[in-house]
Length: 359
Image (cartoon, rainbow, N blue to C red; front, side):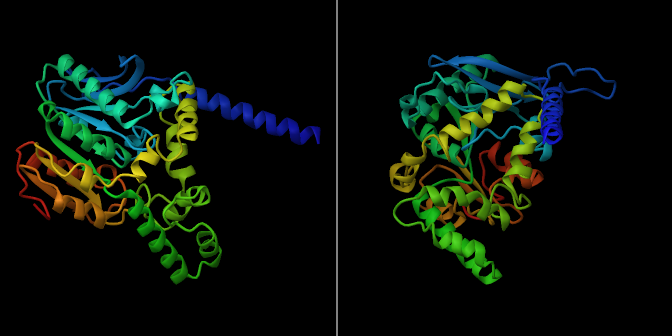
């Protein structure tokens, strides 16, 4: 027994040491062919006080005079996925991976839960935007939301259009309670057709009705990722697809990696989950006064593809484009980066929609 215990403790110690080694806490600089840092490039982790709370972000760009693109993440910051799925966005934009109050770099046990409101998140996003506008000398920037970040982003774009060139919604939310019902019915059918009786029984015991039960939320990620309709088409497990990549991302310190998951555990699916479920964005935000672009993976069941199309068709905007990503689930920018960049450079930057499926 003592030998087994010693082996377990030894393995735990070795794992902790390895994790410390993989956690220098600093993003790698860009280097040219001679191993020098190119003039004007930027690769940093910065902390800024936003509405009284210290909030962190990664800022990366091959040329810091490029347009600024502010990224608003969903239920968990996902900067670390860019190592496994390079986006190439930093070649054309000053890419800002902001981690919202209470999440990742911006986690603190002292942040009151009652401050995690939609109004506060909207205000924080504006303040981060103004910090970036001032720092990089740009009158307007681009705003991109993904998943739960689209719930915040579309509100910000509606309330403060003067700050942004355009809004890009990746996996755009609309009526998310309906989206969850549709995902549940799809998964139940898929598992029945596959003869997976064990998963069928689990889903049948955690039905989605007018409420989302805790038993369903515990099952949701496993059920989605096992059949490739979750984070990415090729992600089959939260552990191997998300958790391990977060641990091997050297831009985070050891403590920051722990906080990334502490924050997720405390917030659940998303800090604004109850508000999201109670809202139909097609009714609450029916119009934007700036160009709007929706990027959506056809295999996405985390946020409904058909509901995003319905919302897009109802949405009034001066210019709009809907783009279907045929090989993607919930993360087109990670799964199909070349197509993403082509749309951004061809349509978004030029304020057009020539590549859109629907406009």
